[in-house]
Structure formats: C-alpha cells, structure tokens
Image (tube, rainbow, N blue to C red):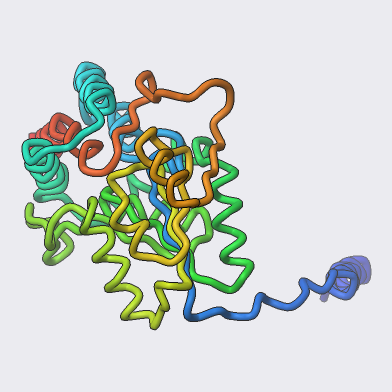
Length: 290
C-alpha cells in the first residue's frame, strides 16, 4: 500500500503538469500553405561558410579514416581550384571519380550516421545566419525550401534536416541492399544539372517556377538562378555580382570586413569541391577493407 505522502507527490506532479499546460502560450496560427512556390538554396558559401564536403572530409580525418597529409592535399586542391575560378572536363571527371571512390562498397547507413555526427561537430557553427533567415522567411510564408548541391545527397539531407528545411537535392550514388555500388545515378548535381533537378522537382510538387526563388554565390549556378522567377546572389563571386547588378537581382552579402577570398578556408563551388575528395575516398575504403 502506498504511503500517503507518495500519493500526495504524484498529485502534485499531475497538478503541476496541468498548470504548465494551461499556462502555455498559444503558438498562433501556422503559416498559410503556398503550395505553388518554393525557394532553392545552394549550400557551399551560400548557406554554409566554406565547402560542406571539405568539412565532411575533416570529420573523417578526425576519426583517423585518412591522414592529415591527405587533408592538406585536399585543402590545397580546393584553394587552387578557387583561384582558377573555372571548371573543365578534367575537373568534372575527377569529381565523378571522387564521388565513386568515396562511397563504393560502403553501407548507406554508415555514411548517413557519419553525416549526422560531423554536421554537429564541424558544420553547424558555419551556417550563415543571414542566409538561414532568408530560408526561414520562405518557410514562414508557407513555401517549401530545398537545398540544391553537388554534395552527396546524404550529407545534403542532414544539413536540410538540421536547419528545419523541406529537403535537399544532391548528387545521388546508386545503392543496392544497403550498400553503394560505386556508380552514380545520373551525374554530379552541378551547373545545368541543378536546373534540371529544380525543374523535375517543380513538376513533381506542382510548383510554378515563375513564383519560385533561388539563391547562390556562384556564376556556375546561373542555370538554376535563371530557371526561377526570383534569383538572388548570396556572398557572390565577382562574376555573379556583376551579372546580378546588370539584371537588377537582389544581392545579399553576409561576409564581414573586406571581401573574403576563401582561399584559407577551402570553398570550391560545385564539382570542384568533390574533385578534391579522391584521397579521402580511397583512404576510407582502405580503412574499412583493411
């Protein structure tokens, strides 16, 4: 038989809970859905300071999945690419090899788990608060908000989920029975492929692209930016800044001080970011197969 004071304490807990619920403020009405409009955000240097794939590689290095020397080589490749500011077929080919080497034979669930851990460790505090505020404005307007990036979709989905966004479009690696096959589904989500992904999603979701918005830092994303009715430049490179000024696009720059070159902090756009991942991919495979 319970003692009287125990019954009294349980009653206190119940009454306290009821009182707290009664005192809770009304969250207010949810935003009216706007199903025909959406916003699309590039990730590297747009939503996040630097390159997401670099930070993922850095997280792998901290787990001894490849060496600091590999990370240094990765960093140098990013900086060199950023300085050149152009992409060619060799870079695209290297990027594709990197993506394949990175995931071949690995468990999908393992990569997803690593993405979750590494986001919390090294990506979360590199989100541009100004860009996230732009995304939240679209959510508050009842619109979908999608990330669109050449980064592997597993990493992109983690970033979107952590930011409370609708979802992510990223480079898709083929998987069977929970393991990556070492082949891509299609190609890297870069340049014109981003625009095609946006159009395909718009058709699936019933979006009116003329009412949609897109945000990017790079002239390489011009196909995506011009696919929507409301393009925006965020922390733009010089070519995109010039283009945005010429066409009257809004320009948002959340960098402080003088213009950031992002050489010290690797931040190659699109496929260039993945091209530096070959060493990381090979080392990861050796680690798990050794």
